Image (cartoon, rainbow over all chains, first blue to last red; front, side):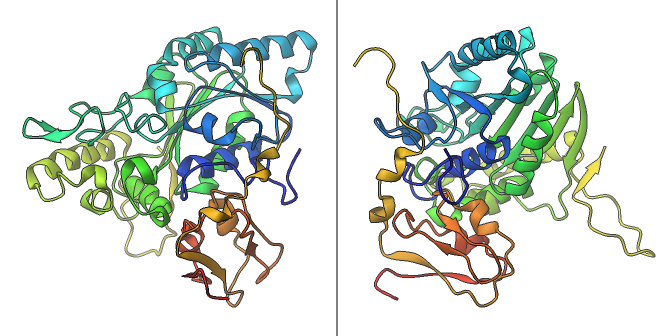
Length: 310
Length: 86
C-alpha cells in the first residue's frame, strides 16, 4: 500500500531528523516497486521503520534476528521459485554496516555462495548507531566511537574499513556497487541496474548519521557528497568481478573538508600528522580506482564526464 | 510477546513526527522552482510532494525540520525559517 504521494516507505517513521538511512531506504524501495519482499537484519532501520504496532513499509517486510536476514531472504527466494513467482518479485536482504560486515556476514556469505537471486543492500553509517555508536567492521580509521574512545593512548578506531565490496566480488557476486545518499539519482540508477541482473547483487550505500557522526542535521547531503569528492568513499561498480565504472572526481577536495564538520573526527582535525594518514587513504582510493579526471584536451572543449568506463 | 508480530502497511503515519521540530521549518518559496524534484528525493521523511514548477510543498505534520531540502535546492527556493513565521 503506497501512501498518497506514491512512496513505499511512508512518513511517520521514527528516524532522527536528517537520517541518511531513511533517505536511502525510501529511494531503494521506490525503485524496486510494490512487487518487492524485504528481509531486514536488526539495526536502526528495522527499529525506526517498525515501531510496533506501526510500520512505515508499503511492501511485505520481515525482521527475524540480527544475523539471519540473508538466510530468511534465501528461504523467501526459494519459496517464490517453487511457486513460480520469482520472475515478477524482487527479494531484498538489507542491513546496516554491522548487520552486513560483522554479525550477518556468515549468512550473507552463504547466500552469495548459493547464488540466490537476491539484492543485498548495506546501509553503511559506519558504526552500530542503534545501540549507541559502537565500532563496527566498517568504521573508518581514527573515528571516535563509544568503544574506540579518544584519550592519551588512543586516537579512535585503529583499523581501516573492511573491504566489503571486494569481499562480495570474491564470492562471484554478479553486480557489486557502492553508492551514496549524496547522489540520490545514482542510487536509483544502480538499483535499477541491479534488479535487471539475475543472481546475487550487493550495493553498499554511504548514509550519514547526524547523531553518531555528530554533525548538524542539514549537513547530511553535503557530508555524503564530500566523502565521495575527497576520495574517501569512491563510487564504483563491479560486474562479474571486473571494475566496470567509477565516478570520476572533477575536482578532488582535501580530506579536511569532509572531516571538519564531524564531531567524531574533532580530535584529529588540528593534528596534521593524523590528517596526513587519512589523506593517504583517500589518495590510495584515487589511484586504485582511477578517480582522477581524464586529461582535458585544451584545443577542444569537452563535456565534464562524471561516469566514465575504465 | 511471542510469535510473529504483524503490522499493517504504511501505518507509521499515525506518528505525527512534525512535533519533533525545534526552532526552524522549511519554507517553500515557490518562486524560482524548476521542478527538479531534488527536495522529494532527499527528504528523509518522504513528506515533500508536488507536480509542476512552483507547486512543491512539505507536510508539516511529519517534517522534522532537518533542512536537507533547503541544502539540496539548486535554486535556493527553499529557506529554513523560524517556526512562528507564516
